[in-house]
Structure formats: structure tokens, C-alpha cells
Length: 291
Ligand code: MN
Image: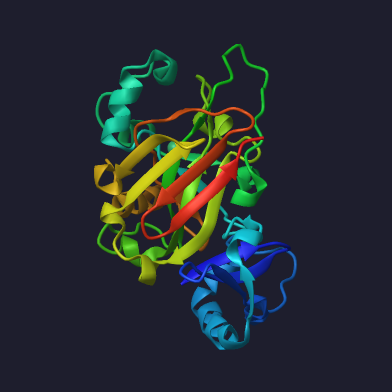
């Protein structure tokens, strides 16, 4: 099932063959009323099995809208954590090692994640594709180069800590396309990568049962029609089970937590007016404007 959030926080199911979104917002009624303090996890993802049953009941009579006319928002509205994986594709290590402006003096030998760990992006950086990326030129003596990074994003479906590699995929609710937009520079990753709109998530979430094995899926990105990135998750250094095992050895993972799994070679700058097209096999296309 491809679940989206669209327009004014409507809940939808996407049918790619027909190019339509079914409005199943009434399924959200199963979530009930919440009171302060709100939970630190995403309620929709926490209750996904219930929500899916309610969606199936709504689908036959749901209003249908043309997919190209709706404004797609981030399919997970309230992730407690947005976790990022630095330099996690074999070909991206070579690219960073060969380019001083990407490396900033860091030693690129070996598994970067093992040495540096993961990083966290602020929740305030999260947007959906319809909102676009708004570039900033912050105070820094660097060149303010803003790069695209296409990434497969795993959405955690249930609470877990010290999750073993063998159990890890059972904790995934679904998958999305992510853009881990990045201001290049020597600053901490969580600082540079947390600018408002620098975590794009969309265009919908494909549930894990439909998506299947994330171990060998193609991902690609183009800017204004020019191909920039094209790879397979087979080239990941820490694959998704290992990322979940590693992240959950530090943190308790909660429903709705997002793991941006890293980007392959081909990162490059974007500027105002550009159109980014990202594609991941089994999910679809996501178009994002740069403002
Ligand atoms: Mn990244």
C-alpha cells in the first residue's frame, strides 16, 4: 500500500497505474483523541495495522483525485528522530576522498559510520515534495554550496532497542524517498543538514509488505533533466539491517523514526529555480522545486 499525506493534511492511498489518490482521511478516526503531552512517536505509524484495516474499509467509497493535482506532504508528519548515515556508499567514499571541498580534512579510510557514528537532523527540517527546498545563505566563510543527496529512507514501525540484524527488517513500517539536502562545510553534520526544508520526504510511504527486500533497489536523481546519481542499495556499506542494529545500539527506536540510509556518488550543487527529480525502484518519482 502506498500511503500519502496531501493538501490540508488529508490521508490518501496512491494508485500509480490509475494516477489517482483515494481520500481515506476518515481512517484517521481510529487514532482517537490525544491530550498533552503528545507522544514522542508518530501516531499514524504506531497504529499502522489498525489504520490499514480502516483504510481498506474506506477505499471502495473513497473520493478519488488526480495524483498530479494534489500537494504531497511528508508521509510521516511527526517523526521523533531523523537519523542520517554519513558516507555510506562505496562509490561516494571515493568521490569524497578525491574532492577536498567535500572531505574538509577528514580521513575517509574504512567505514565512516563505525568511526563517526550517525547524525541527527532536526525535525524542523522536514518537508514534503510539494513544499520544495528553500536555500539559505547562512553566516559562514565557506562558499554556501548546497548539495542534493538522494537516499532510501526506512520508516521505523515499532519500538525497539538493541535490535539484532536478523530481526531488523521486522521493525520497518515502510520506505520513502528522501533528499538529505546538505550545506557543505566543516561544521557538524547535524548543524549543516538541519536547515529548514533540508529533509525532504515523500512522495508517499510504500508499506514494507509491498516494498519487499530493500537490499537491491535502484535509486536515481536528476537536476533539470541532467542525470546526477544512479546506483543500487547493493552498494551500501552499512545495509539497512546493519543501520538499524547500529542505531538501536545507541537509541531506542520509536514508530515514525526515519533512517536516511546514505547517498551514492554524484552529489552536486543545486541553485534557486532548479527542479530535482528523484526515483527509487518500488516507490516511484518525486519532483522537488528549489526556491
Ligand atoms: Mn546523506
